[in-house]
Image (cartoon, rainbow, N blue to C red):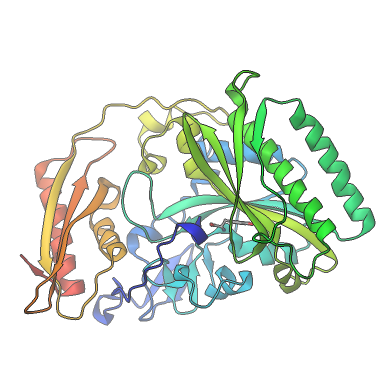
Length: 433
Ligand code: DAH
């Protein structure tokens, strides 16, 4: 989750396209041209993913998972065609993110230019969807975050946002109570054990503007709706003897209070599934929605699909290989059968950075991705030290190359590694050791 996962380390990080001579005048995204500026850090490799929209590709596991989640909320609007290009204001400020939130930094997020970025979460659309007058909705979209490279991180992934608002009146709350009664009754008949926490507490407080009774009922509705969703997603094999276990954890998000995270016990592990809470009234105020109170949640589709379909590497979602794609049919959750894993090939690169230059790990990873695309499996820092006399920093990275679809030739890997080294020299002025 964006708000809990981030390491609170900030770095000035040089930007891949910040050197004017290396920067194109504009970038094109979904047919629109955007002028670049010194802030621009989107890379060709990232932009090539934007039109793909895996969550809408027929038979793709992410599409099947999306429709399964949508089927749990049949009366909601199902939205999925919002452009990923948003203002930082919309991605952060409208949702009450503090000015110094690390997610805003150039090392964590992709900026098209100083005024526009690629959304880092589907919550970026909350205000506009509420403003449209939607009262219960789900929104699915690709989201973008700069990250390290390994089997469970990819800089583009997919999220679903869900929200529901109610009239903050006696009549409105009566409807919540009725819905809660129905959901509670159905859950009581199911094989699910819920490890719950209070809806409101001193550390997970009701918002000042809310009537605590209303907030409590809405939080209850949120929990019941999501417990029902967890049962639909993970309850397939549950029984009286072996019920599905779900646990609720207190959380913090800038745009909800109270806030929660949900975990599910699946395949012997607790899995973090989603973040949620009672929507900050400021969000609804900004959207021009009056007299309503509601809940929202956001979940990552890849993480769930990896366990439901047994997909071992996040890059596989992007595979064009028929041995991957032909295994899935729309609407069916089936277990992925691994086809042979091709050999990996690692290459190390050690270099000195120019004095007073900072190379963030995410900058390094984007640079490797631009040379290798999905042929890079993971990147590890092996060594990092500062020379006591010259004060120069030395770094050593191990890059693991592997194709999911074929054997890579030594020549091809050497060629990619050469490109990585060239990019390090031209973009960051490093001296190879
Ligand atoms: N946007 C959050 C993230 O990406 C997830 C989230 C948390 C969404 C709480 C919500 C919410 O709607 O209420 O980490």
